[in-house]
Image (cartoon, rainbow, N blue to C red; front, top):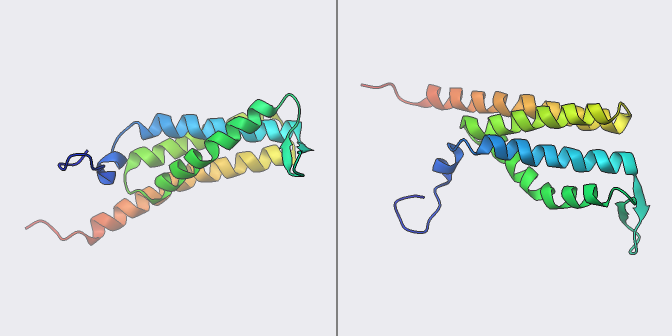
Length: 142
């Protein structure tokens, strides 16, 4: 929290190490949900949309509930110039990609793994680049 009561300090939040386990859990949950939908496929829902097949409804619910938190974690990992969010995306992306590959080698499994691995590499690289640019733009100490 910042000095004013009730306000949230985003800069301070980015420095917290809880981003690492948060990234791991959220990205692994989304990978589990996607893998279940890849394996189970879709059935036509009552309104004509795609719903998870029988036996894979839990995967669909986890994916539905974790999609927005995953989006927030990934965006924070890609735009923050602090290491914890980027490491959370790196650890979560690696774990999610490995999980997807252990579930199968079909094209959707491989695509899920590749997207996870690209995020796992991109987040620390972008964070490092941002930190390097921030330090280069800072005026030298007198």
